[in-house]
Length: 505
Image (cartoon, rainbow, N blue to C red; front, side, top):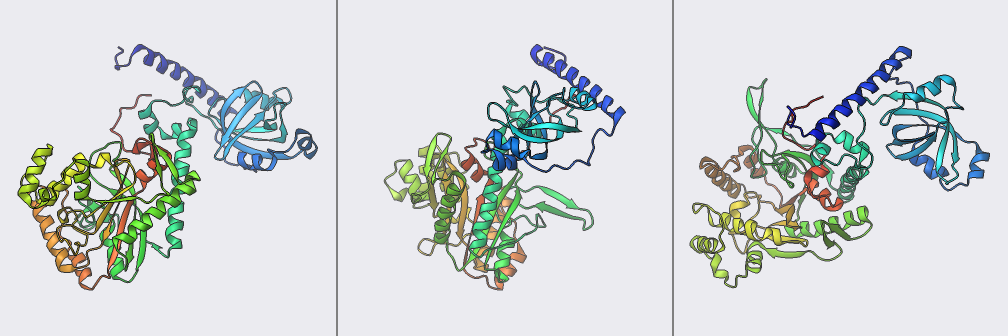
């Protein structure tokens, strides 16, 4: 091993890269002697996609007669003799750069060209003997010198951690990564169009809050100097969005960033994107119907089919989603026949012991039930399933079920063993909500860092009367994972959070 802990192959590769960087810096210095090395006066006329759409189907003779001139710009991705492939934001275009037909100064400029450089070029559109649309270059200009070489073309940027840390390089060399984020943008755009068409209004709520609320989660803490006040990055926008329904906005949604001071995993990032929406005079059953329709339409929009493949499983969104209560799911997947095992706290504790569940005996009954579900059932729910009737102890903002006050009118959508959506009929009874907040405060005082604070202003808002309503949150990152067949949440985040790394030039 070397002094830096590298193996010999890594050390040799680093030395070679440093030599290449030194050579490119020498070329840059030569350019600086002649002109401005990073000009900003170049303007392109056409993108690669525009040229392919306009001329891709034309015959070579027709293009020759047309003698169409244009100007393009992009990054040099391949160099093979006089042929240079440029990539811009829309695709690739091939340049034919014959140094024998170029002016002497441009022929010299061509010698200073490297893979990764960004250039602009003008010339005539033509097709090669193999039928590839190309540009016969009469003039070109180096616009930005790449001082670091791109990864070796056959293997690309294959180190997963390096791809996440250097996303800019990943996007240059890995077309599959670019497609993921283009798809993400399409999904978000479609969601906005979907809710706008249903008459929802998009709103924005605070990302820094004096009290973290709307979810049971550990918040990030900061400090506002001018107010000399502790503040929190929001864990959810829920309580502010519901204040808006009190104010008379009956259908609202927000595509928002949330922050939860929790662990990192293939499913969790401390900063993530959520869709949250609230619908007055609707109940949680209406939300389940809407969610099925939304997922079906996204599938058709993105995949042109209601059938979606994810990590070896197939999901047919044209079929109705299964609906199963928390208790029913436990009974089904743990092979239980006796519903009396959920009758009271002692029965639930005995069942948890039988199933080998990790739990705290001091927890209330509903929290232990949820541990059973999360430890023994959730991962088994592969096909789209709405899990309903969550215990009231773990649903502090949801409306109690009128037939069984121990559970709430709440659901979570589980696909591939992971939660993608969480919705419920909203609790609009201010006295019940105040009681739930006080129970959360007691949990916090007993050491639960994820329990909620008592939000007196939110109780005040409910006392002005909130209409019956339903609300839902959908995790955008996990949704994109599903529709891009991505195994890790880091694959769908442009800049995922990573542990600090010591850089070495």
